[in-house]
Image (tube, rainbow, N blue to C red; front, top):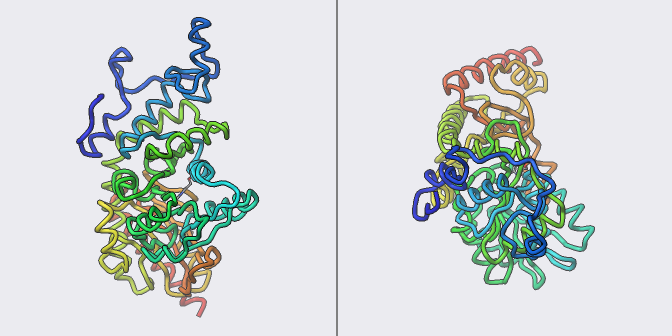
Amino acid sequence: MDDLKGMSARTRLVHAGRHPHDNHGVVNPPVYHASTILQPSLAVWEDSRKPDFDGYRYGRAGTPTSRSFEEAVADMYGAADAVAVSSGLAAIACALMAVLKAGDHLLVSDSAYFPTRKFCNQMLARYGVETTYYDPRIGGRIAELLRPNTRAVFTEAPGSLTFEMQDIPAIAAAAHAHGAVVLTDNTWGTALHFDALAKGVDIVVEAVTKYICGHSDIMMGTIASNAEHAGAVRDMVRMHGNCSGPDDLYLAQRGMRTMAVRLKQNEANGLALAGWLEGRPEVAKVLHPGLPSHPDHALWKRDFTGACGLFSFVLNPVPRAALAAFLDGLELYGMGASWGGFESLILPGDPKALRTATTWDEPGQLLRIHAGLEDAGDLIADLEAGFDRLNAAARAAA
Ligand SMILES: *Cc1c(COP(=O)(O)O)cnc(C)c1O
């Protein structure tokens, strides 16, 4: 469909980027496997070397399969352009490199996804970019950290593992008054729940690996930009030689079509689990911005239209054997990195080791849950049985 303007994100998610009648009426776009793309004449060949060439020139530079996915992502975000890359981390790296140069200063949230920190501390530092980490709850006071050479602010809300919200509109207003670019990692919010560009973000990255894909079987990232930054971002991705395979692009696009209904169930299950965990004596704290008890709940309600299935909770301190008894006997929660698929996951995390601008003082173990699409009652029963094992093991160790 060509004119989706004014329609809701849920509708755009279903139709954007698809042109069935250009393709024999087939509902989904074709999968083009391509490196070489032939040009029919010298004149077209010469045209194809020009930067504004509208056709296809080489597999790495785009095929109808990648273009259709990118068009859909740009549409979801109301962005001037979106580009697909090989992973969520590649999206973060390319977006940062597109706006930074030697001598620049960068502000990054202290609760950012850890590989983002590693990229800043090791890669960007090597190329002469200095990074300062800020308290995710800093809001408009970020103005105090802006230096004459501060070129960009990298936000992520809620924070990885610890789920602090950020006042992105206030941060963006301060950054823009200073001439700095605002980026956000919107993997948790997705285009459905956080309208990043409308809230003042210039460049939004998302790990397609998570909810857009939704089935735990591909790695991909995307960068959606406003008109000011779209050209620089696409150019940086091309210079890196970064691209995605056609089968993965196809699966990502197929996942996108059902994302809104999946997310509803992820959200409902996550909130059901988080609410139930809050009432458990074994639990010290639940970190889910959708809970009214969360310190940033009002901010989440103001800026987001929903939650996904990812949140954390902190146990009261228990011996390691009790933690192992809890985790090892779970039937429905797999222990593995990543999230956003149809299945539930649980992982221990250690935020203490990942912070420099703020501290993490919880004495108990943090556990991050991804609520999948299973029945919420079954998911709760599995955790309940886990707490029985945990308590028995803690008594045995005492
Ligand atoms: C997983 C994740 C990424 C990275 O995505 P990959 O596709 O695994 O590289 C980036 N940001 C957040 C918040 C993530 O959870």
